[in-house]
Structure formats: structure tokens, C-alpha cells
Image (cartoon, helix red, strand yellow):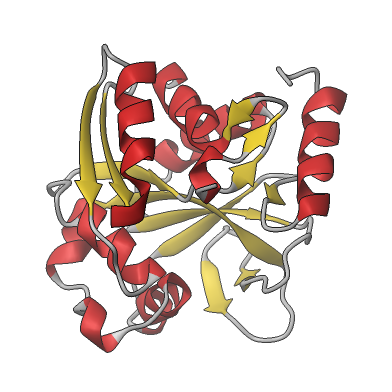
Length: 212
């Protein structure tokens, strides 16, 4: 089963992400799928027929290439971008969006969390204003959570995917280059990678009174 179709209490991950985006007022989406996951693109179109959805069907070499392929099609304005495998309470998602939009000085705003349930977390250090001072390493203040508000203008100067392997390498590059990258803290986000993560995700949603 494609990861995007993994159900959390019968609701596929991709459906939860798209539903969250829709509830913020978003009506246009660009979603990238591997060539082996064409049925996922069909599912999204059929599940959300009223949305303007551009499905990019391409097997990319890395997480950064997927991010780049979507981002470079988004124009110069600010765009909400996401991986498919995170779960957090819906109110926390909306708080992230509101706070990220208000952070006008940022080129990129990352959702970050102090809750670590990831096999390979990407650690982030923040200064008192929320600006990211360092990414990577064995420890930090918080970890990335798979959700981003990005200025589309950064893709005009972003390295080509042939020169960077992973999305975390691109985020590190942004900070190293002095781009204003900020973090917004979400108390608890589950990165769904393992079987036990499914139980954690359902328990979190149930505790917060969200739909499960």
C-alpha cells in the first residue's frame, strides 16, 4: 500500500492532509506522486472533485527533488507545503498556519515539535524570536514536523536537485545561506513511519477530540 493511503482509523493520510488544507480556505493544490502511485492521484481527484488539483506524477530521486518540483510550480507568493505522513490535532495545524502567515520576515516557516517519535529526527535550534539558528546534529531544541510555509521566490535560487540529496539538506542550506527561517512550535506531532506510530496517532487524535 502506498504510504499516502495508509489509514488512520479508516481515513488515508493523504485525505487528512488535503482536508486540513481545505479547511484553511485553500482551493488549489499541487501534489506529487511516484509513478507507481497513480491510483493515489485518482483517489484524491475523486475524493475532492471541487478542488483545482494538479497531480504531478513523477518518480523523483529524493525528498528534496519532490519538494523542488512542487515548489517551482508555485510562483513567487507564499505557499503552504507538506509531507503526507504527519498527524497532529486540527486546532494545532490551524494555529501553525495563522502564526506562520503572521511571520512576514521569514522566507520559510517550519512546523517544529518537542515531541520526538521519529527514527531519524531533524533537530532544530531556535533563538528567542523563533528564528532557526541551526539545523541537524544529534540534538537540539525541537524537531521538524513535515509542514512548511514557503516563499515561492526561494525556488528561483534554490540548488538543483542533482546537487542535494534530501529535503533536510535544503533546509540546512537555507540556514547556512542566511535565509530567515523560523519555527512555529506544535506541542505534539506524530511522524507516521512505523506500525506503532499508527497507534500513537490515533491515541493523539482521540485525546484531542478529533475525528478518528
